Image (tube, rainbow, N blue to C red; front, side, top):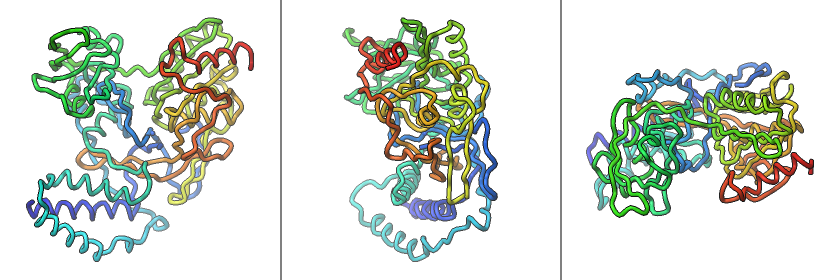
Length: 459
């Protein structure tokens, strides 16, 4: 191990101590634990909360060549070669005097002990010592673990970049949702309708065993996704093992910019409208409004909003979605003792779906922004919730984009339902509890059937 690498380790720790102990805020997106339409006046000296995204502790394994989290950045235009580049890091501004914190929690003596311990590792460890960057990332993750907050966390550059793309609503790749099998193989969950993967004949259940002539067996889902994604107009050759076929085969696909479908809607039997929202990405309210308008034009007797397995997204989108169904009222409260924040996010009267009979479906996969919407609808008495207790993510994080494109997500506030209830660690209990079926939307979807029954009978 070189002296440069060991010094890098210590420099990272020192820099991290400055970030953690001073609490400096970078410009960027805020994350919920993953903008109001109308915001009440903030308290004096408060920091305005602009945007939030989902930050569940476990990454979803269902990805559109993909991941699920992001910072607040604008998407690059189609064809722009800068689309895959990380955003520039923002200089750390000085804190207001009332927010300055003592640095005696991390002293020179602490750093001396750290250095002393590292010297023993460097000279005596019988094994391979990782590269300086890997050590730095591990040091950050280890230091964050000492905070005891699962939602304050570090995200490596490649995962952070995919997350930024995904919640912006589009990415450049082959256009397929992928997941990891129990055996650790990357599998096509389903091609995105109209995408290049579908056009190339890929099917649900296809196993990806190679990319551009090299095996990807043994690689993580993130590693395989990173190799499949790339600038639109470029080609990628994927080796597929298809159940029922004796031999693998290659498929060459030209990457395109893919708009991620986040809304599914249809008219069910008995004149019931159904709409499912799978993410609160930057265009969630726009896509959902269009779908609801189309459904309401058919004069349905009731509406089912399905938020099951929706891990969250931007706060401004959650408030806008709630506002679509709510008259004037509180959507959520947000508070932070660190930044003296105590404000309400509110809905306005006059949106298109404020009076139609309605049921909201939730389960343990409904988190963060999904819980904001579900909690607002329940506490305002607008509709009942059917399903299972939700995930329970009631804190707010700020995303800092670091100089190498990685992200540091720091818990800075807590949010509360309109009835002033924190859902952290508890979730939201539905009005009617029904276990989640194996196949959402299928014939045996007992939660969906119960929602239909309630809309038809009121019971």
